[in-house]
Image (cartoon, rainbow, N blue to C red; front, side):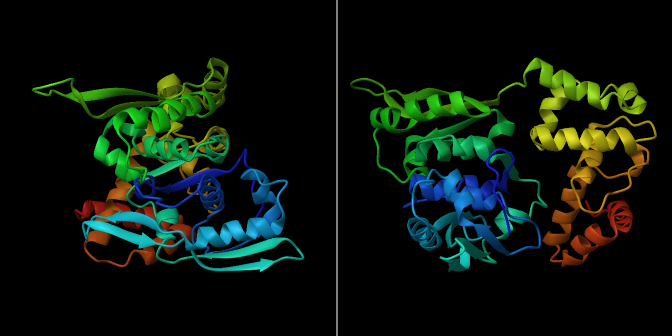
Length: 359
């Protein structure tokens, strides 16, 4: 049975979901959606949960299981509008194929909709978000969560712009700029900056008017990940530098630790560095090499990494090759199976594809 731990759980999903429209979702429904997403694993579609665990996370500890079952049934009926680049329009998705309740054991079994599931497990193009569930669990406003997950998707840019029309569309409201400040931005920014791992600021952009005062056209939103506490960063750097080759590479510093934390949470990074310390036995130069070693520690089948950095593929190269294969309408399921069962052969095959120009 799946057990949700709000401190350790990590939410991972494509950025498409950060740009989605959650028109009729309530605060608890969005928290429930992200809580369930945090338990999703590749190649797994059905899950059995202890309903009491989820109730605690979404603030329903004192509510009956019957009330909770009503909430999750309502979630199953909610429409998630995700933009389709191919169709150039929003497409409606539903989260579950079916739900099953056991009122006596207080359990719930869910099966995810096969059309929706790829947004939670298929990251071959590298365009995805990853953050602690505890960040959204702490937020008390629906708009705070929506702004947080959008900002996670835009984090790599450090700055993004939303027009007044885009904001109304994203949050499914019809507010004037003054009302946006009061209802959305002022409380959401306060919550996000105080309670999460992000720090955001906004700056209004004005359009000049011939008569009267300038009109607010939109908002430029600056988003940064809060820096690690000095002792935390130092601890991770010292951990990695226990390996002579990592230390000689000079790869680990405060800046690269923050880069790694865009892809891994602190616990994953710590586990990955422990793995790399024991496994890396040759000189290397690229951060992508160390990143691959860390990624290997998080997989059920470890990739062998005792190679030079010239002999391996970076994660970015791997994603580009897989995307190129998909664009050529080649079935990549065989490559996914090879990656799981024969990782050495998988890397060798992708290297050959790269040499043949498949990148």
